[in-house]
Length: 255
Image: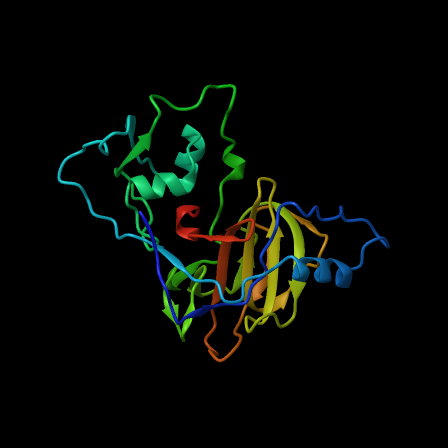
């Protein structure tokens, strides 16, 4: 269950996206990069937001459905994420995390039993899940900062990934580049990709950027090289997943 409280921490001043705004289709000599950047900045509002954290996950002693809720249990298979499970059953991701008391800092594991509220079976074949919609890790590395963690008096709205070797940053999912800035809100060179279902991915602290606003990129495309930014000079990627303007736990989406 979500718990919100007062906090003295502030989050990275990232854009607050509003799905009511339709970004223009990329076309030469019609919409400039600077104009798209101004549009994105105007619809972003994140100053002074209070963070919310999910209650820690407590493994039940026995598999018992939450009182008053009908449903079934799903055994997590290899490669499945909480987001993918939510799509298979047509259940809201946040509700799935809340009912199962899955913490913001945990990812589901193979063999784990996840309770699916108000469902008796997966969605019908008429509403199929496309594996091409899956996310991939944007950088091969180690998570050094988790979602909701207080880092340098800032509430982390994503995860920080320190590279194992290669600093190549990949598009986690196919979509359109809607925002590129060379020094945004202390995150250095920042990229935002809009996806087809109201989700956005944010890539901050890049040393080099290989895309521009308006570009269409496929999942796995090398869009940047990880670097450093702000007061922390360590090399890592700051990665976020957002539904509209709301920050999501990236570990729910990554395999």
